[in-house]
Length: 189
Image (cartoon, rainbow, N blue to C red; front, side, top):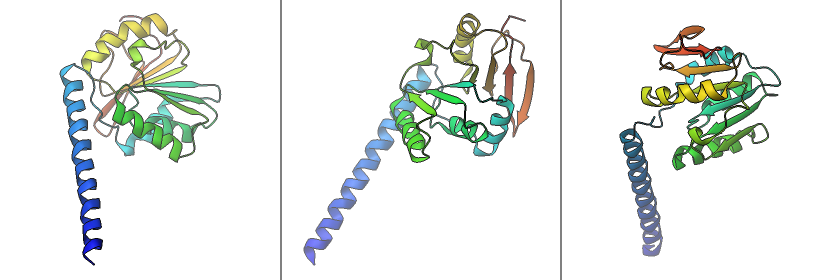
């Protein structure tokens, strides 16, 4: 009987220690990301995901890139609206990246959704027909010139909460207190 309680106690200690390490590294990563002026992992609200997917207007031959895809929830929601399209998520932080890979695997969507552990500023975005981002203003400012250089007019860029500085959106939609900016022409306004 004493051996049983010792085993239970050992398992409990391992679980608690694992949780403490996870929280420590996750919090450290959030703080380091924030201090560098990058978007921390803050997922889009589940209630607005179908509206984001609808605003995307994806077609069978669409290729959606999610910049800083976090846990891949936007990619999965968009896949539900257009399963034939291709989806690529870029996430450089390890914990959201692993969670995204798990979510894609667990939902059985590995065939159409690919998640890359990579900084999207180092990626070639020219292959996308659609781009989604939920970033902070400093990143949006840096992203604007990259999009102008790599994305042809007519391709769709959607940004949740913050727009691209000095670029007029084609449309702005209010989704539960969050603005969704839609761009199709990336020339300066």
